[in-house]
Length: 117
Image (tube, rainbow, N blue to C red; front, side, top):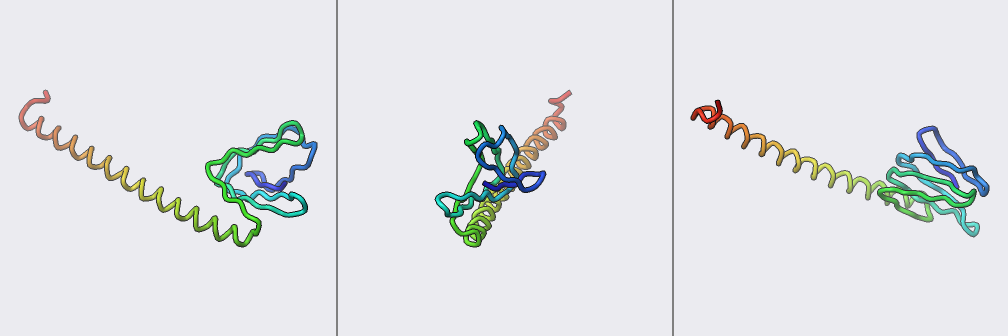
């Protein structure tokens, strides 16, 4: 298996020492029955235990057989997710600003009537 963390690219072979690392946005690759597989991750944690067990915990993963096809799929999917996150962020800020305006308006009204002394 091949992966990448903040320190660079690394490989894991059978008998590997126990290992834990944080992954940013890597592409994992491995061979199964002579066939190379790929998986793009959106961050996560990779662990190796018992010299043979590799586990990955991630928010999102996209697997594929062809790296060039996977690249296009991942780019489109992650871009769509980023757009949705931006929209959610804008809506959250809009709600916060509305609530702040309401509080300021009520505080001004209270100050004008002398309720807040």
